[in-house]
Structure formats: C-alpha cells, structure tokens
Length: 176
View 1 (cartoon, rainbow, N blue to C red):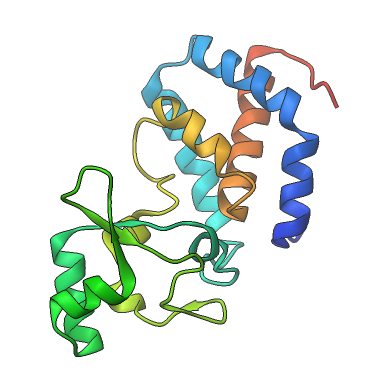
View 2 (tube, rainbow, N blue to C red; view 1 turned 180 degrees about the vertical axis):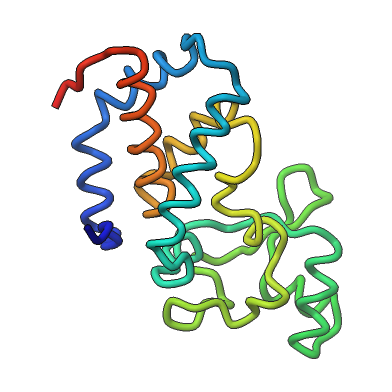
C-alpha cells in the first residue's frame, strides 16, 4: 500500500488524530519500555517508511522552517553562491535571539527551487539532520516530533506506526 504524501491530507489526518496522539504521548512517556527499546522500534519503522517515501519530494520542511546555520554552513553556502560571507548573511540570514547565531530569514527557504533544494550538497546541518528519526532519544523529543507530524510525511507515518506498535504491546485499544 502506498503511503500518503500529500501534505494537505497529512495535515488533515494529524488534526483528526490530535486527541489520540496527546493520550499516546502520555502513554509513551509512562511506558515500561526503555528509551533504547523505543528507539529500536522507531528506527525499524523509520527504515521501512523511508524506503517508501522519497524525503526530497515534497520540500515542505523547506517551505515552513527557518533553520539555524552553523558558521561552517555559512562558509559553505557563501562559497557555493560565490559571494562574500557578509553578503550572504545580509541577503539570506537573520540573527537569532542569542545574537550570535544565524538562521534563514525567509520562509519558504530562498534556496528552494520548486520542491528541491538548490544547495543540497552544501545544505545546512539542521537540514541534513531533519527529520532526526534515526537519532536516539525519541521520547525526549516527542513534543517536537509530534508538532512536526503535519509538516513531514516521514514523521507522520513513523509516528503512527510507532503509536500502533506501542499501543498493541501495551494492550490498549485505539480510540478510532
């Protein structure tokens, strides 16, 4: 079965699951499963889902997020764009609240061309690591991931699969 990738439908499904998802977050945080066991479940589902969905197809994350950039990100982008670092900062970046870091100042990202990243080989670290489902600590990031279900089809489908598996393991019936 083909997984849904239409972002409007993903947003609708996320809204429809909102109450159940909030209950699930509490269940997950109170689960007898260790963080490592939950991460193993997440990794399994992430591998399955990412084999079915091409992450670079929708570009929705690039349309809604303004990622922070490291100093190395700025240097790589300036080199790629063949412009001085300060010009790149002035044209594309905003200073973050801490006054030391920068983030993309436009949404959608000015480096997005259609649904594709025009600077993909040199994209910022924050973009490289998104959606972050392969990293340990799923439970500690559950709020962040939950809020991104409506943004990213990968996150949505992994979240739904993990929710079903944990619910089945815990012997809890779905509210749907």
